Image (cartoon, rainbow, N blue to C red; front, side, top):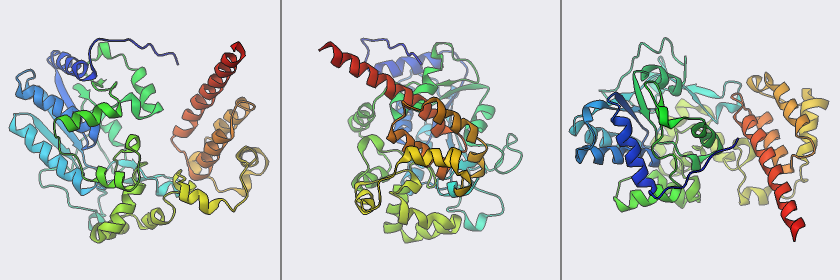
Length: 382
């Protein structure tokens, strides 16, 4: 997918302020998505400071916080702080505790790969109590688990524009999402990404220069060995939550017990957090597995997809897309590498009901192939 890159004499902070100012100038309702993550904190502080300086009208603004129940205490504390900040300047702050269907890396061992936040009837095992002021009901949600929060936001906030702290540097999926957005023509019901071009270094520099208080869990994850460019926060059972769960198990017995009551399989994280089960492989895990025979992932994928699929346990949701996986294997045969087959094998074996891995593999395989061709051509010139 060709993407046009335009150079500018503005820095990313100046550009973000101009974008925010312009979207407020439309005069319509603005919904600011807040999550307590580092990108969200930058977005919140940008808007907050611009309100204080008189550049933005707080009456246009509604801040929305989707409480996913399984959140680190320091994330919840950050949400309370920013709720006070925005309410103090006259903006609205909506704190939602609704039964949304959410991704669960632990439940990818089952066919659903999901769980329901704040599920009615399970109040006795909720990981924490919702705030007294939380919104527990919405006419847009007819039954528990009907939709994820992204779908809900598109429906509930369609009368305005959503400001989201999404950045292209975070992942290929986010890059493609933003690249497909025509941000010069944002209207009601649309989403706008003012800091889409910020790098990780821009985010942390902004936080440092303004001395912003950020969730403590970032430091704990960094101390546990998570790379700076991989520091992402999500709910306990989300894609990036496994290392955080290890830290909780080691430092907060009470919270860990509540997590286990809510998700009995949580103990698997302690045993296999750095293994293929959670699509990770650390150096230590690699050393432990060195004695085993080196896997031929291309042969494994061929066996799983064509020769002996009955020998493997594949999640139902993934099995329903098996023809797409076979098409990927056939059409990329001869250009895919072992690393691609490894990802393919893990996606098939451990679940990919939403076909995220499948979509990324299509792009990655061809990008890597084109890069190899270009490198060979460059070598040929010398």
